Length: 254
Image (cartoon, rainbow, N blue to C red; front, top):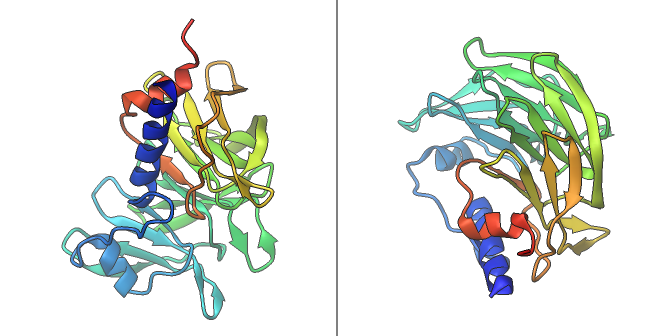
């Protein structure tokens, strides 16, 4: 029964992330929605998207035929797409996280010079980008999860770190077991973050880790019934976590 619940939990997480199970085609969104409008306006491979507080969708970066781009687009609910101020750094495979104050943290990714530690913040009210410092480790296809206290957990590669918007600083918080990218991240109701699956050393992983912001520790969670990996971006997830996924994080019954 427990293995069945684990399988259901992972399947639910992947469906939320990519709209399908591994090996199945991704469901297409209605043509009139913001995502489709962005694609029509010039969506790029491995760009990053975030839904702003006012409902608009922010799309940044990605790779086009001409190489990496710093292009920034905004799609409104009525389908209108407009150009915004480009990022300071052209990148793809980066993360985008809406902060508690409505600004957006963009971190890591691949640049024309290679993997980067750089980060920047977009202010939609001013259409302005500002430098946000540097991560401690370069990352691509990582996750960036907004914690309950307003900080952001960056997970991927060999470690996890936290960005504090108030101090504009990244701090190292622990090592992952093993290194991973393309995983899924879920914020649990108690404030912990579950990191599931992904890929490492060229293979899908069946590992899971739990990060506890109260203690600042990363601990191993129950392994998955089968190895799973997400698309290149990984999939930071917000909102309630399904009971089966919470059970997976809770550990074996005592």
